[in-house]
Amino acid sequence: MTGESFDFTIERLGECRFPSPMPVGRFTGDSERILYHCRAEDIEGYRDRGLPPPTLELAGPREKIFFDPSSIACGIVTCGGLCPGINDVIRAVVLSLNHHYGVRKIYGFRYGYEGVVKRNGIAPLQLTPESVADIGDLGGTILGSSRGPQDPVEMVEMLAELEIGILFAIGGDGTLKGAGAISREARRQGKAISVIGIPKTIDNDISCVQNSFGFETAVAEAQRAIYAAHTEALGARNGIGLVKLMGRDSGFIAAYATLVESAANFCLVPEVPFTLPGFLSALEQRLKRRGHAVVVVAEGAGQELVQQGGRDASGNVKLGDIGIFLRDAIKKHFAESGSEINLKYIDPSYIIRSQPANAHDSALCLLLGHSAVHAGMAGRTGMVVGVWNHQITHVPIALATEKRKKIDQDGWLWCSVLACTGQPAEMF
Image (cartoon, rainbow, N blue to C red; front, side, top):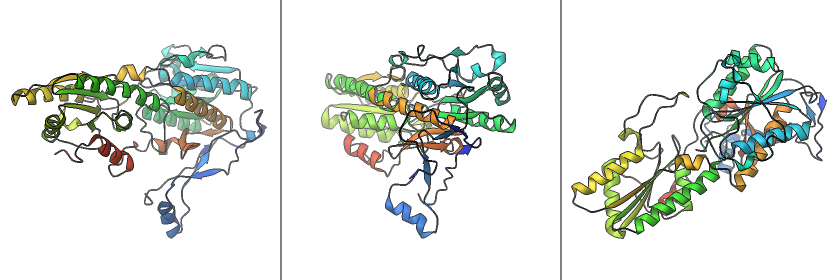
């Protein structure tokens, strides 16, 4: 860990000259930071080399702000796949801008970055406290979404035409990279436009972000699918319940849902390779011992076993369907051995991602939305708000999108999954 290099410097548009109208008793100082590392041995490694340990800037309202609230307009855009809590974030941003700072012009750009390009002819919505009052009860996003990049030059031109000082970009890796491009283009054009990212990834795979909103809701819904698979498996001779969950590059949903619903006997994730013969042998042994089995597989697991199909609009590799592949492979294997099985396959992905946020995620959405507004009003840009060591922090977009956060095969999470399922540590 101590060999890694971190630059948590947050770009600022300029000097903060306006007193904040925030009606609070405590403001966050610009010098307030928290340690990136929490283990003593990691921190000591930096000190042994005469280096300061890396720290992150704390989020929160500042006493002085960069923008004049009486003249600024702001914009919100949502991109990528759906995720529980997007509407909660939109609501939190609108209410904070309005009630904390008195901002009255708030535009909601529709259908992702397509709506931030004027020639596409997609008129933005006017967002008010009244129009967002009840949207937290709804799944999805009231602004709509899309995938794929747009020209940063055209987007900055439209933002400047609408006199927007802050753009809040709610999305995952591709969205945040797009937000970084907008921030760089605004700087190149000499436009004082703050770009603040709010990481939306149901897979919880953004670097330097401990928890992303919607993840806990996704795990809770995934638990229901695993419970159903277990019930089906118990109800038949040699019953097998197979559940495919989200997780393109990182298997956090599958891992945590396996811990929550401890009836799962196998958890297959992208970070831990396996072979088909190795898995089928372990599954066969499980059936001989207990007469039933529950298998949880993340969508990105075992991709070397399936055929992939080009790239989507966001540039992501189109994954092969590991769930269908395993379903058919399991049936074929036991049919060839003359063994009777009863397999039920469950793919709840679209049901999960379209759910409204649960109570914990809703609270997180509010905190992230408020923190994003405070950061933007204080002239921060090219950054995302996130949670680290249970604090809301500022992270440069470049660092957040440098690589995907993944499960550590030697870490406590995966070791706990192995202890919970009883599956072999290696299936080759």
